[in-house]
Length: 148
Image (cartoon, rainbow, N blue to C red; front, side, top):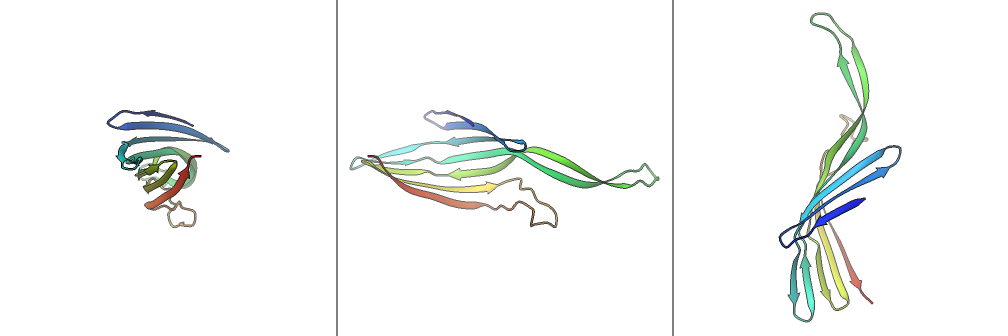
């Protein structure tokens, strides 16, 4: 996995890539934009927001079966079942998040609400049992941290 970020005062740009190995290699990529907003508060505390937008992409490998008709003009042909291994590189999801950190002294309260929109799900006609399922999803991760 490799990630590179270009940080500046207007907008931060992040790109990354990875390779996953199993019986074949799968490639992934991500690209995102964010902008950190920091507020100094009374009592030696700080509040930070980081609105972010990311695009996640990767390879999708599957087997596709179709029927092809052969023939020419008025001559009847035959219908053949053709099975092919398919490997595509597609956008897999869009993600929008708003990490929030409140820090006071040695304590930090952290929240990361996010909204994910899956893309290019592999579906098999009339076979929902083996099709990929996915729908837009909101989730949040929350936690606390103390430094000793």
